[in-house]
Amino acid sequence: MASRIACIFFILFLTSYVVGGGFSRIDYFVFGGIFVFLIQFIFQISLLNLLMGLLMFVGGAYFSLAVYSEFLDFPVHNRDAYLLLTVGWSLCLTVCVFSIFMIRGFIKELDS
Image (tube, rainbow, N blue to C red; front, side):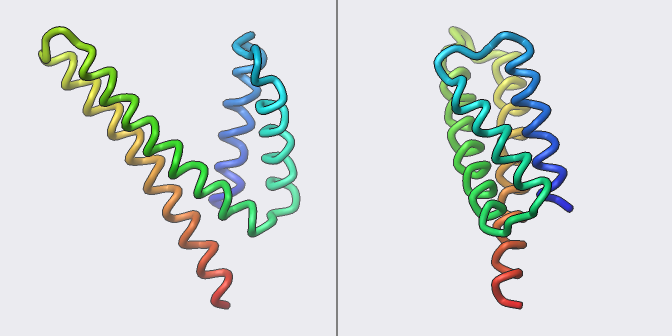
């Protein structure tokens, strides 16, 4: 169930990216992602659950570094800068936690 919810989220995110006109060089990546998430939503391939979990974890870790980089670009570390850091890291941590649950679910499927 969690992987289906993640698939719906990613399909909506990538579709809104395309509809919003934000695609340029990564057209194939976006459409490939939509295709993979549709296949995952329909067939529930367990290996794709692992790959999605790993991709989400790496993405969350990468974006946490991006949030910290933006924090360092603030000329003065005031309340707004710390708010950006707190909210950004909270979102990145949430993504990492959900990805760990997805990876853990895949490992449990292998054991049984």
